[in-house]
Picture: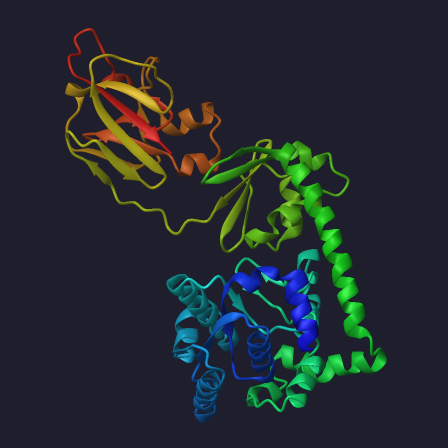
Length: 438
């Protein structure tokens, strides 16, 4: 296995030879073997061990074992203790998810602070098969069937193409010591049930199941590339606008497809949506219809679908602008204020007003039902709700519209239209330029 490991590093992961590595070690056979292989391959690495304090003395013994192993191999080791149960309770997570989050958050923090290039974990081929079966049993798309990636940004899994049997044989051949996690014997968790009850049956039916599984993953990853290319080509035609707050998609492009649901799934699956029938129905729904995930919302607005992030409750705090202030930060941009001698080019993002018509401090707030103003260039006043309708603003645009006000009067519907009452006249002596920048 050592020779195969070295060859794999040389051919597939050569960047590891020139990198500073952090090896995640639990004390179990997988991570212990990875540690010894890295040592024999002369890689530059340190160890990182998490004590989750979930198994009493057993957890502490794992920590002691890792410290002794690091001393024997003369490698640096980092230990972190966690109150996993309290974290899981506070964050409303399962113990497994809580431990995973704590582990990786610490690994990334350690890597950033001490400038490690990559984090190595000991996932192997059997882990990959277990993950595949878990995703399959819960229902997933093509992405969930591609398996664990060998390289995912700074996470590298150099044992992914070795089996659990390969790893255990290596450990026994070289008389390595490791720790057994008693919780791994329990079939209470789905992964352990698959490991102990399902996968052995599959291997009994077909001893080549792991090898065949690797071939299947290769085919699925190739197919995934074709899907990604097709979706990218489609998005080039379908996306109407994109900015920091939302993405608009042309509905007619979806309607022209033979299978719009498949494209809807591929485009929106990473935003937490699961109601695929409801999303497909948005294509023919009335304008204003919404579908929500925990993090995003998808809106049918006339001939577009508009994707935006779900904000926590809208901030109703009023932002104050004092006289001679140069700029203020808003939730979605910056307002710049500058006294000038003459009027320049104007557009929706830039207005010029008579400074003497203002009563300071000015305020910036979200629009509310019943608000009205006197649109520049028009006669009389107009309700903002009617103005938005005439301007064909989407529901999301309306929700995010801010007003610059003076003494409760609207000076500017920011990034849309100034108010006639504050315009420049022949009598104006002090000109104030106000510019909105996203």
